[in-house]
Length: 141
Image (cartoon, rainbow, N blue to C red; front, side):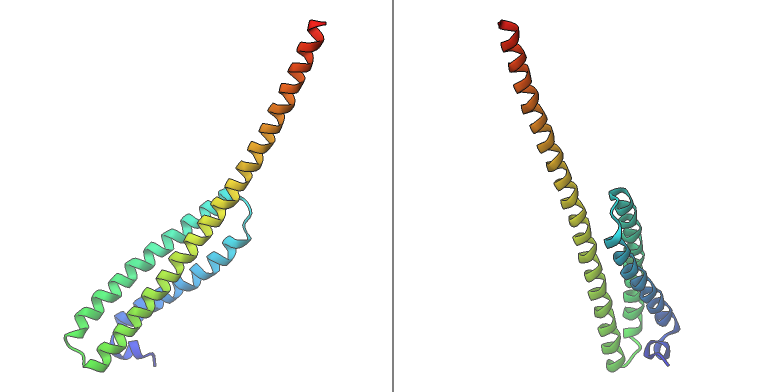
């Protein structure tokens, strides 16, 4: 039997929902790494952000329930609940960091494409400028 179930069915249910969201986030971030299209990456990041919001809401709900139970539980139970709460916060922090990293990676790739495009435009302008000068010389003769 799950230690949380022994303390509170509601806490066990919230914990299960949070665990499901963590699994979905982990799978979503793995899927995000494989997506090459920036539009699809953005949509995936939005979905992951929504899941993280749900997770944050559940963690706050878990925290409220723990605080309510701290008044009626013994110190060992309170300690276990606080450790579980801290574990959830650590997971949430890791997910936020992963999301931030993915967003920065996508932005870096986008900036790289923009720089390449600007280099191409600059080269085309130089080439066009040389052609205009050459045409100008030929017209003068």
